[in-house]
Image (cartoon, rainbow, N blue to C red; front, side, top):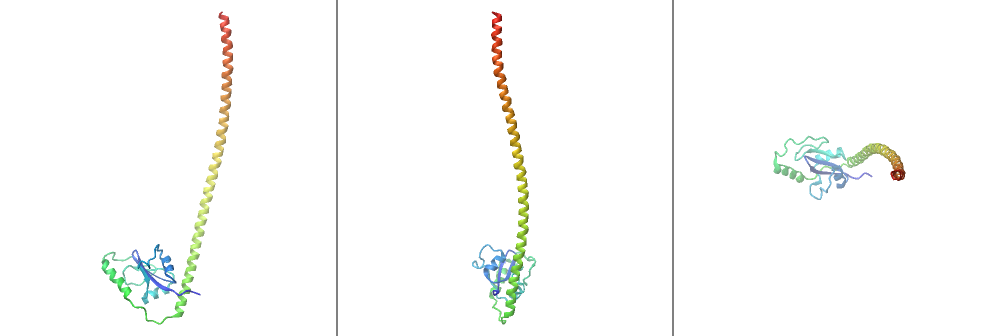
Length: 204
């Protein structure tokens, strides 16, 4: 059974944000908040009938409007035209005005609530599918990069083994030559001693 949705509102950066969600936790996740804005007093449930109507029309979608403004919430809101022009007091007065609004006295439309909750769950499923598709693309990209890394590593390892083999062969040749050189030196010393002894005898 679909959970009843509530409208939550906060301000982040240059925008006021509003969202129809089943819980504060779901709202924080949708806003991408890394702290509990509700506990900090930076977010609250909205009772503004216009804001509720806008969010219930697009449940699960984060709606925006320029921070401190009284305009309607939209998916693609423009940046504020006055960045700091009204000053903190003006923005504070407007935020205070939001809190001062009384809950709507309109009769509760149960069918609309059920539809909004159903739309929210459908939107969540759609987003989950999109995230799964994006993750599949990222996974394929990671696998492709890993194959390239494995291929390069294999080529490097093969070249390293071939180099080590050639170095070992050269080392063996060097050792063989050194052995022949030592044998040549030994033979020469023996031959030189015999020849020098013969030379001494000839002189005597």
